[in-house]
Length: 252
Image (cartoon, rainbow, N blue to C red):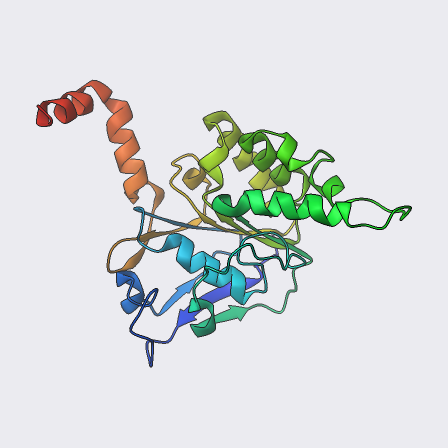
């Protein structure tokens, strides 16, 4: 239980910020600092509030490729990431991660393509394992979207590292999300630290995690049962007929 994480806090100085995107995202106008949980930190909130923008900037600040992958990936299909990372200050512990990965669903296809390309570019006759061997041994393009996500998660993540995941549930069934909780926990036991954006009430239930809920003009630390995701899903599942009747009635 001595492990206390690699990333401690994230700061954004409000002095001399440009008056343009992404700095005009409402919550960034008041954001100053947040503290990471040593094991699992979640960011949640409505679409468009800036969750992915923030953790993309965090990942780039740490040396990860903006489109995802490990720090050894330096490809770029199109440079679309913001320069927010240049304005962030990350406080780190004395511990040095031995592993790390930035997973973002929207560009995972490009990561899979890069893995195939790098393995194809290895000179003929060269001995040694291929990159894809670390991802389960089967091209990620030869699997379904969900299977490739799961293969990455189960094979590539080994612990003693920082794993930044942008909505990993987007390709996973509810059953796989529950299984993912078990894998996260096993990796936490191996000194892994996770930073995750999610809309999943299943993933968000990971015990003792720090949850930051992002709204239009602020970012707030909340308990699981206080989160909007939990309240909306619980309300619906408790009485789906009532919710559906209200929706359909209002549309007539």
